[in-house]
Image (cartoon, rainbow, N blue to C red; front, side, top):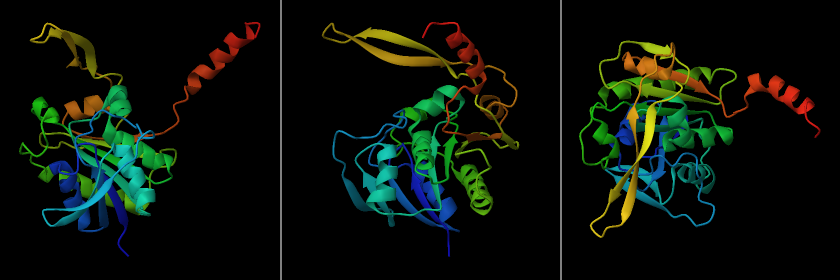
Length: 263
């Protein structure tokens, strides 16, 4: 029996990264594509609970897929429960653009779908590919050419490893980031502290009304063993993640603070 994989993303069902992952895994697994109909980057783990969702069967270049008019997490849930898929693994990606540091994993729709899979009890892996041209992150994924050959090799190796071994104890999902340049190795990493120096730019439209762009300059903090540093050194970053956001190291101090109050 070939293992069953549910494949989703946040760049949309037509993304070259999604189909590169499909090609990498279909050689050894039964892969079902359930992905958003259009670009859904930076929506995190949001779920559509106030509106109905539509899912359409379609063929893309002779390959079967399900297109969901919703977010990545919506697509994941419709795959699990609307289609009653029972995957051995959920794979999200290959995302066009890296998802590294505290900042990215909490906003990424790619990682968000993998997190929801883990929340539903299904092991999951998120894959993202660094973009040498930052503008490609924000371009229609059908309109630019990206070489996925190196990324496909990474996806195939890592997915087969985790299908064989399972995820490491204590982790709920794995976040993988692939460099755009020639790979110089693989590294188990931690999340970097930050990636952007965020700012808001105010502009005036032709009618004299203000509008705003949220933007940020990339910053580099040289933290040993972080995903940011690994990718900067052209190494594949493999970060085990957990859904538990508890700051355990702060619990003791917080207890002391409470003892000092008349609560």
